[in-house]
Image 1 (cartoon, one colour):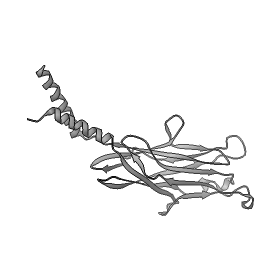
Image 2: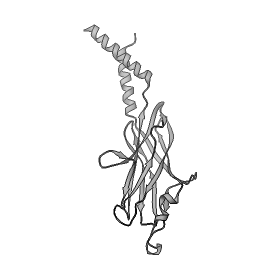
Image 3: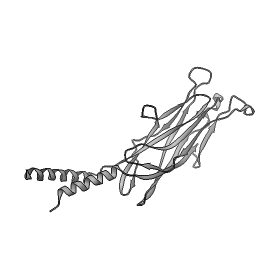
Length: 221
């Protein structure tokens, strides 16, 4: 006769193993500019108000991937670091007028002693530049992604949904944008997470075992 108590214990152990997944991962990639298939690590635009011989520079957005980080179920992890240099450029050479499109294209590589693989993901990039003449001169950099589109991949025969969360903020949440003051340069961290896909049959077996265990205990009492 099947030991329902043992089945319940095994299911609990299996659930714990899914939640405690510890896979080493890394990310790489860059920007796809104007529909090109060539990935660039950075993108520059604009004609500086200040002549180049006096130190004038273009505005720029650069990305670096993250090396050797642990990836756990349903826990945020950093996938990229974006650095934006906000310089004083002429209005008619702005980001929106310089490109037909700029997209972030990245690959998540993962593996352990049992398996390895990769997952490709992307997001649109939007830069809103404010007038430098006065008032609010901060620029706004956004990543545009759609998590309603299912993004599933497998690790050790378990399916996971990949989800981009956005940039971390001071309130322990995530935003799809970050703000960059005029004449400055800083970096923002882009986060994602993976969530295990529930297996209906396993859940049904879990409930059956639990019910049987309860009924057996009641009969003994």
